[in-house]
Length: 307
Image (cartoon, rainbow, N blue to C red; front, side, top):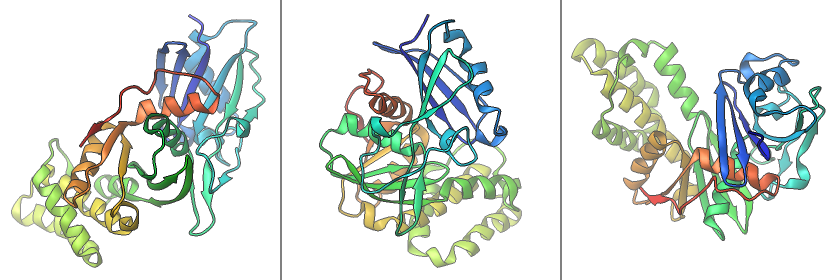
């Protein structure tokens, strides 16, 4: 099985690859060898460990990569493209001189804006994949995650965006702070989550106190871990929605994320009267990588669904 090309999403903690053919995905693989676990010379070997079953001697397979492989600490720096611009541009892909002759590697550059200063890597590819589905879409694309992005798009271009540290704050607080002991367990309380979103939006200045209250309620009132996690998430997402209000208020909104996270954001927005459309992150990544190299793909299908 030899693919026509290989799509790669290289994150900070994960490496994902897909063997692509005319009909879409032929095979996929992933590893924990994200950028954070690799030194300067380890990127090509990490990629080859993942994709070697798809390679043939004497033929170079095109490999197109988005994400942190193009960061300054990555495999090969792909300088940011400045706004306003299309999310991806086949003419702007950065070639990488791989030692293995079986692969021909190019990296998708991230996007940047000067005022306020902000950057993205990887999300630009998902935006391109979303626009392949949405067509002539003028509005906002929200990409929840470790560093959530709210992106204004118009006439096929990214006009502006803002990033929020929401996902990283949730991970740090739930896994490394004094709150961590009250977060251990499974389950989720949707009602507590929505109440916390409202609380976070109504009283953002009280966030520090609200967070410590999670610790106190766990000690004094046996706050269940499912409720504690839901409240922490709701407070942080509520704070994000306050900061991103100018993006979602009165705008059509599309959410690009994995199902669980997308549904949390959709529920939070619905409580504000915003009915967001959901598109799957994986499909948008593949659609954007295909757009970056001018390939047609069935990776993104359907028209999404309402929250």
